[in-house]
Amino acid sequence: MNLKDRTPGARYLFVIGDSFSVSPKPDDLAQTWTRVAAQQLAELHGTPVMLVNNSMMGVSQDWMWLTLQDWMAEGVITDEDYLIVALTHPGRFWYLERDPAMSNSNIIDIDRYCSPEECKAIELFIKHIQRPSLDGIHLNNRMGWLAYQVLKNHLQQPLIIKGFDQLLLDFEQSDVLSISNGSLCDDISYWEFHDPEAEIKNKFWKGIDCRYNHMCLSNHEILGKQVAESLFYKLPLDLTSGYQRGLLTPNILDDTEFCRHQLDLNALEYRTTQLKTPYFKPVTPWLKRVGINARNTRG
Amino acid sequence: MGKLYVIGDSFVAPPKPDDPTAVWPVQVAERMGLELVNPSQMGTAQDWCWQWLQRWLDTEITVDDYVIVALTHPSRFWFLETEPRLTHLHVIDLERWCSKDQAKAIEHYIRYIQRPSLDIIDVNNRMAYIAYQVLKKGLHRPLMIKGFDQDVAQGEHFSELNWAKGNIMADLQAVEFDPPELDTDDQSFWPGSIDARYNHLCLTNHAIMADKVVTALTNDSQLDLTSGFVTGLLKENTLDNLEFCAKELNLEICEYNRKFNNKGRKAVPWAKRTNLL
Image 1 (cartoon, rainbow over the protein chains, first blue to last red):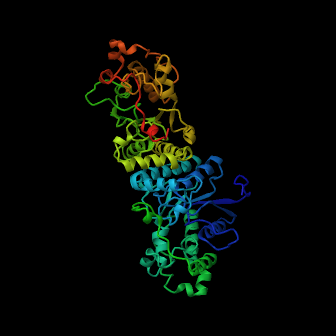
Image 2 (spheres, each protein chain N blue to C red):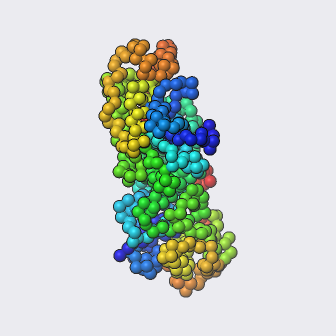
Image 3 (tube, rainbow over the protein chains, first blue to last red):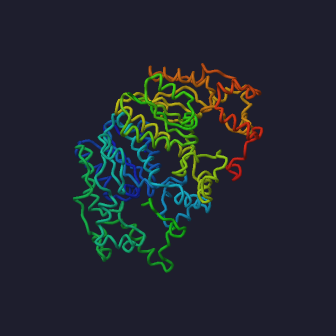
């Protein structure tokens, strides 16, 4: 889509983020929260709201801000449009230009996608250079950039939805940016497990999360509506209550009806195939193999 | 009493505490009746400077205060928290100040991760952070002085920032040499290889700089670094003129250079030894 070629009379909902907001494949019509939000906003306005979702799995904040900077430079976001930033963890870093998804040490097989030298550079950066205090300076600057654009261009207050729990320092109480209370990971995704501790040990999904954006579709619907109301009525977004919990019980994946209503069936099929292969065994994550103490990386 | 907040690298780093020389930030503060706050340090990166700016802009700076940012090169990176001056390829003895593993991490970062396109994203964010604070709080426009020629991307157009014309490196310090080729990357003008000028400028130009900066801050006008300064002060035998040295230079460093005279032969920088250059 050419963003400059706007549909006349339509508002736009721009979304940028990581796996918590990435769109399903084009032929998959699942009602993910970003789609629900766009539809709800259209209903509230009584005019079309077009969804532009440039999210990508595994990306860092720097990659997201490049997209935002491009959008602003091209002037594609008007004062009638909405903007959602699904904010990934500040400890992620855009190491390799060609591969924005390689941004954190939790990627199990990062060494499959980088040369040995690049892997070594990432390992040494995480071990000896990266630190939360530096990430915090960058985070503050990013929020400052966004807040400045809002003030200068008289944009609607953007909604910052934390993917992971993090403190937005100078901007946590901002009246220019609307910051979610709680995070998608810690307040929705985590509590969908009947036994959240089991998932921390990777026992439930065994490495292949079959939910859209790490959430069951029931919670997508709730979130989408909450997001639309937050944007339309300029209300704070609270992720800490009102969502369904304990949906993922130990044998729930045997419940075909549940899977059909709540999960990504393509991902489920892929997972089933993978787990059945005789060679399948959980890979020791890269960070463990190189001895990284993941003190500030997530996702 | 308002304050003058100054942050940057060697272009504005204050002299040693026991050195009473009135370098240009001191002169500006005195003439404007401001208390000077200047924690600048040699060799620092923009991130380190922004650590200070964020602290000041979030809680300290008021509409009575002024800010000067001497903008260092965006490719410098604040690698190690405790060593903010170890930021770039040209540090001669980098490995003296960090462990082997840290030096290896820095080398690998520069080789495989760092790139101008990534630096520019950060520059845009940094400039907008200040512009936002100025806009929101109605502060005086900060005076942004480029130490080095650089692309400040979107920041160039932020009307909340008062950008100087030109940069200190190319438009001031380099043209103090006559000819400019007296001081190059390979052969230093200074016998012991250490620049004996305060902030890489002769004191005559500190006075001119102070005049111009006071005008720019008071009138909220553009500071022009490309004209009005004295050029060609440093000629081949200038350092033999002790009167000139006493008037224009840091005598302690002149003395060091005399003592450790290596005829300006620069030590091989760490980056060359690791084949990064």
